[in-house]
Length: 172
Image 1: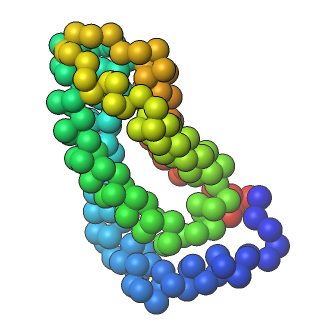
Image 2 (image 1 turned 180 degrees about the horizontal axis):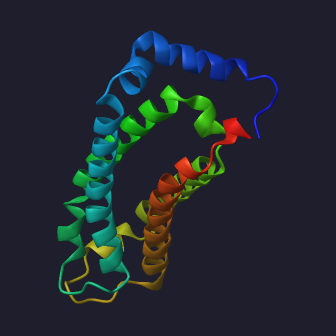
Image 3 (image 1 turned 90 degrees about the vertical axis):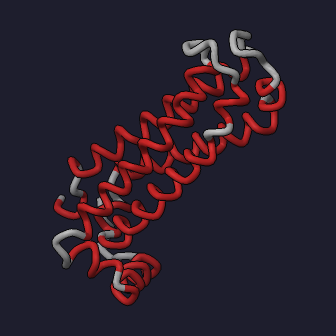
């Protein structure tokens, strides 16, 4: 549900998108949006291919690979996240009302926050113990729980991202 008056900060955000040319590139060119979508999905592939594999190994589903070796792939996942975040920003700037009042986008942002907090918990609590494990060693229960939360959070982010277009709150 959109309020009768759009908040000033949202108007300023939309104006900034127009002034910087992001809106024009995304909405007034044939290839702006499709290229941004392709880069967004490439970023998600890098993220899920690295973080997802790391999570699966921590869950005990992919044994035989040392976690320290998998962790060396994490910078690729971070790069993928950066690609997705940058293109996601372009999507939001091009149509702020469609996103800020969209329940699927709101759920996606909440799941991203959960994934981020979960990552912080991992690095503060269990990361050091996990990196010294051998390729077939069982991961401690706390780390397995963190991996499950991570994997399901990121799968939820992707699912909510696909559902965003099903909700058109500005048309209600």
